[in-house]
Structure formats: structure tokens, C-alpha cells
Length: 146
Image 1 (cartoon, rainbow, N blue to C red):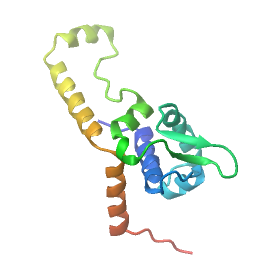
Image 2 (image 1 turned 30 degrees about the vertical axis):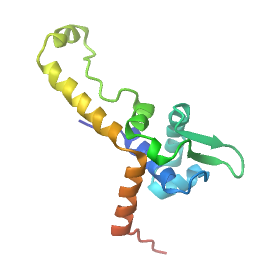
Image 3 (image 1 turned 90 degrees about the vertical axis):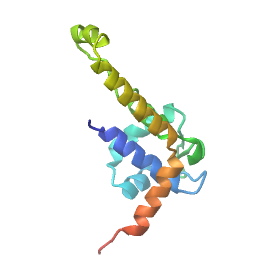
Image 4 (image 1 turned 135 degrees about the vertical axis):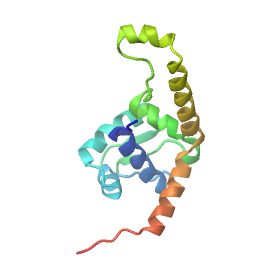
């Protein structure tokens, strides 16, 4: 299974916002530099996150993005669904296979996998992801050379 770049970068962007003090607006450039996400791509990711009510934005010189709720109240499943919708689509696109799949025992494997992934993502919060990020940054500080 492949996790899309949208999900990777979206979770990284939300982590960067979650690491900032509550209510602080963060500009796309700062998120981009903090996580190494291309700024133009990041701007496109913020649209569905805002539409889902996970972030709020303000325009202008002091504008930027901030979380709409505390990181403890945002699940990773909410973020993934905002970015990709139902990201583990188990229904085959082929109409013939779709009909056969409903009668196949193999479909049970995909249903269980989908359920397990949704359970894990709904049990993890952005706060937990931010805590893991802090640990990683302490263990492997970034080196800047001039």
C-alpha cells in the first residue's frame, strides 16, 4: 500500500502547526521551511484542511494558519479524511469485479484492513504526533551550515 504525498505532507504541516503555541498564526513559508514542504503544494493542502474545519486562516501581514482546535482534539483520521476522503477505497472500480468482489471472501480481508487502519488513525491525536516529532527533533537535531 502506498501513502500519498498529500497525506505525508498534510500530516507534516499539521504537526508543524501543532508544535506552535496555541492561537499563533503561522505563515505558509514558515510551515514550508519547518517541514521541507514545497510552499505552492502546501498552499493547496491547506484548502481542504480549512474546508474540513481543522485550520483557520487570516489574510494580511499578520495572517497565516492556526489550528481550529487543540491538537488533543484532532484525530489523524480527521486529517487524512480531509485530505483524501476515504483513502483506503476497497470497492473495485471495474463494475464486473465489483459485483464479484461482493461475493468473494477476499473482500473480508480488505474490510478488516480498512477497519484496522481507521481504528488506529482515529485513536491517535495530533498531540501524540507532535510529541513524537519533538522526541525525534531532540534525538536528531537539524544541522545548519553557512
